[in-house]
Amino acid sequence: MSIRRLPPELINRIAAGEVVERPASALKELVENALDAGASQVSIRLSAGGLERIEVADDGCGMSPDEMRLALERHATSKLPDDSIDRVTSFGFRGEALPSIASVSRLTIESRARGVDGWRLTIDHGEPAGEGPAALPPGTRISIEGLFEKVPARRKFLRSPRAEYAACLDSVKRLAMARSDVGFTLDHDGRRILTLQPAEPPARVAALLAHELDRHGVGIDCAREGLRLTGVISLPTFNRGIADQQYLFVNSRPVKDRVLVGALRAAYRDLIARDRHPIAALFLEVPLEEVDVNVHPAKTEVRFRDPAAVRGLIVGGLRRALDEESQRSAAREQAAAPVMWTSSATYDADLVRHSRESGHPAAFQESGTPAFAGVTVLEQATALFDSAPAARAEPAVDAVPSYPLGVARGQVAATYIVAEAEDGLVIVDQHAAHERLVLERMRAARADGAVGRQVLLIPDVVELDEPDCDRLEGAAAELSELGLDVERFGPTSILVRAIPAALGKTNVPGLVADLAAEIAELGGPLSLRDKLDHVAATIACHGSVRAGRVLSVAEMNALLREMEVTPRSGQCNHGRPTWVKLGHGEIEKLFGRK
Ligand SMILES: Nc1ncnc2c1ncn2[C@@H]1O[C@H](COP(=O)(O)OP(=O)(O)OP(=O)(O)O)[C@@H](O)[C@H]1O
Ligand SMILES: [Mg+2]
Image (cartoon, rainbow, N blue to C red; front, side, top):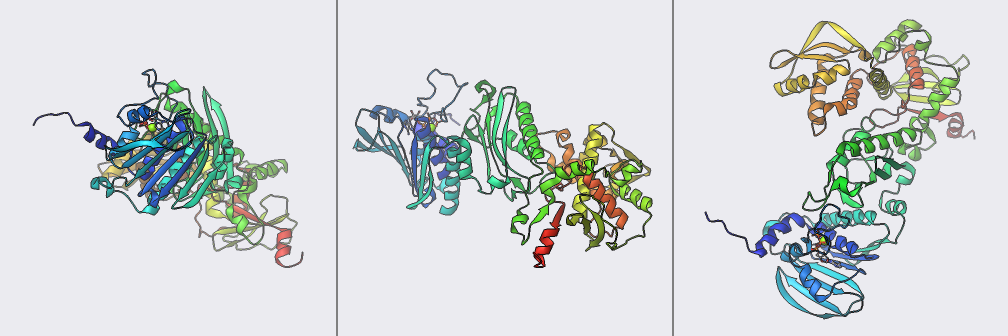
């Protein structure tokens, strides 16, 4: 085998696959170049999702004919004047984009620097295909035709014009958010899709994100150790089935960075179901020496010198903002409902405050019973009230004491508690509410370093497949922090010695199997310790009263009282409301009395 130097033409084609894999990536490179050239207006025109034609025109600095020729050579760039790649502030820095694109398409550059005449230059699949004078205003216009048309290996990975168009639109949105001071237009197949005037960043972001975010969004602005994070995120109840509306920027560069995506995910942990995704536009500003941009061929990833600090700022900042906003209305159903239901997401915090002020703490706390969450509490409450089991209703004869969530009057479909409050009718989703209470209890106990465990009289032996046993064994130390003591007991079994006190009676094999699956899924770059909250949520789910379980009136009241004193109890661990209230006025409206 003889080693040979590849001809530049072939090198360009190989590089092209990394730099431009589809129309959207070629478009991204052209728009980045326009922005780097100091454009104040960028006009984009696409045909057939960019498969036929992509054109980007700018009013930036333009190029002389010599510069145009140089721009098409590999590793020719104007953006690293001093040979240092540590402090890059431009989008480009490799001098790769134009030659790569020119080797796999027909590329025409027309450009005019200030004070000189315009020039046109065409390259057809890497070969010069003519040049001459061109009439155009100062700036640059670049068009790409037939991308990958003569490169079947790449062409077959391209998708339909619609799908390619969607990807192009996404690229444009990201860059338009990164540079709100620049005006943009986008036309597709002769139709005007976007017109964006120069604007402040929040206005630009608002123009490009789901407009519902003005009601369901939370503004972010926090800083720590030289890092600053700004932007907007959605309330947990306003989420999506795919993570397509997450726009992340580092020093104005759009990125798809694992550290950032992971931190965003972590901030919503236990507020949102695992298969749902928040909407976010987050701008991180980092000192240039703290971040390396030269780690990915498409410039979409970065490497942080201190990823833990970045993660800490994001998780902490978002979490704080979400907690502060947790009393705000986020229930979309609310707007859609025929009457105004007050959702629990609306005034969680008010509820807790009111309950404290009105001197009605949870009954079992008054009685001096230790406040365990879980079935235990309900069992204790049942004993305390000594009520008839499975009572289905209670006549509304007595004056209603002023509990914010009211007095239980009955249960519907063995799933919802109906309660009467002074100011209306309350419906509680018993499983969702209880799951939240158990989780908050476990959290509080962990924060106090006082996690209770119930030692099982006879340890439970649970059979699982070997990888699951390995996972549980590997996580034994972390699980123990949550009150769950497990030990390896042969190749395919696990011995459970103790379970969290918060759980009460529980199906131990089911819990352990779920945890093994959870750990498998969480397995990623971050340690399980970072994810203990997630694991706690799974445990909490097991300790919670199921939908379908008939509750006694005393049990229902105990649950309502505990909700009133538990922060964040208005939202279940998946971000849905746990209760709704129909005010007296609304009931009257329903019956036409008002
Ligand atoms: N729209 C434009 N206006 C003015 N100059 C441009 C424009 N597009 C490209 N150039 C010039 O051509 C050079 C090569 O562009 P190219 O995109 O290939 O590389 P780059 O932007 O330097 O680096 P990267 O490969 O990382 O994008 C740029 O450095 C710039 O000087
Ligand atoms: Mg470039």
